[in-house]
Structures are given as structure tokens and as C-alpha cells.
Image 1 (cartoon, rainbow over the protein chains, first blue to last red):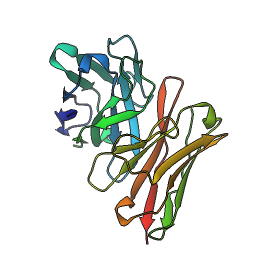
Image 2 (cartoon, chains in turn orange, cyan):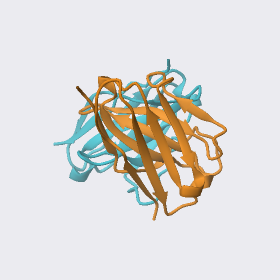
Image 3 (cartoon, rainbow over the protein chains, first blue to last red):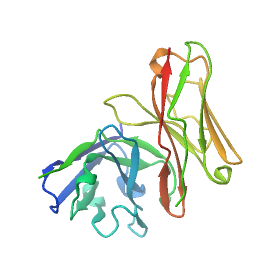
Length: 123
Length: 106
């Protein structure tokens, strides 16, 4: 069974940093592109970042470019999101999601999602 | 930047057919997919590559994509289908989500 478990969320002050993790199990993590998607309270889904299986392709939304860094450790089946210079508008539930096509570059659909971790940016 | 537009809300009576549209420039030239999200839950993929259903998704969910519009159709809508639905596509190495449509089963 595919499982994605996010962690690392919490309350942080504006300008602060936070590192999110996503632990994957139930599939061969190293052969799938992975993604982060967020959802502000009461709002819609917003894509944050994507990374290919070998890290050759990395993409970011304009809203986080230069502040957030996506990475992965295939040996640990884990995905990460380093978030710096956090702003109030970054407050959201952050989801980790698997790309639906194995051995493909990012650019497909998201077939499995984690339960999300809440990041609150407030003074 | 690329945009996908969905109606904020759609209402349907139980047993009837609901159609949710997603509009974007030349969307038919891209693959569209759809997610269902119920309150307090993570999104669930219901349609991918325009019209394919993942395993476990009921046959009453179908999709199409042509021209500038992708459409999610729910046939024989049930109360359990009441949820928010989001379309999604890729454009220039960027993921784009529609704003979401709240499907209400009256």
C-alpha cells in the first residue's frame, strides 16, 4: 500500500524557516517524480514544487522560487521541502504527492497524496 | 501565466448528471486531470489523462477534453459525491490547478 506521511509543520514567525519531510513507503520511491502542493485555509490547491526521480528536473512556483528548496533522499525514501523567508501567505496545509507515471519526468498527474502537514506563519 | 477557470459551484439532484467545466487556452492540447476533495481530507485523483479512471473510482465519473474546455461528468450523482473538485494541467514546466468547484447534491 502506497503511503506518504508528511511531518515538520508548525508555527513559525515571519522571516523564519522550516523543513518539511515526506516519508514514502509501499512503492519504489527512487523511480517516481514527487511534488509538494499546498492549500491555504479555506482556499484551493496551489502547486509548490516538483522534483524528478534523479533530481535532474526541479520546478518551482513563482510564489516560492528563491525561498523554497525541494530535495529528496532516495536511499531514505524521503522528500523534503526547505522553506526560508516564510511569509504569512505561506500559511497552508502542505501535501506531498506522487507523480502518477513511473520513470517519467514531472509533468503528469498526482495519484497518491499524503495527509498533509500544517504550516502557520504568524508573529 | 496559464490559468484554468472553473465555476465556483454546481448543484445537482441525486441520481442526475453533473458536469463541471475547466477552461484554459488550448487546454485540449494538454492532458487534464481531476481531483475530488471532501472536507478535512486529502485530494483524491478521479480522472487522469483527460478521461481515464484510476482503479477504485466508480464508473459514474468520466472526463473529456477538447478545444479550450475539459469536463468532468458525474452520472447518477450520489450524496457521497458532494465535494470540491479541482482540475489540473501542466504548462511550461508548471502545474496549474483550477480554482475548484463545489459540487452540491441537493
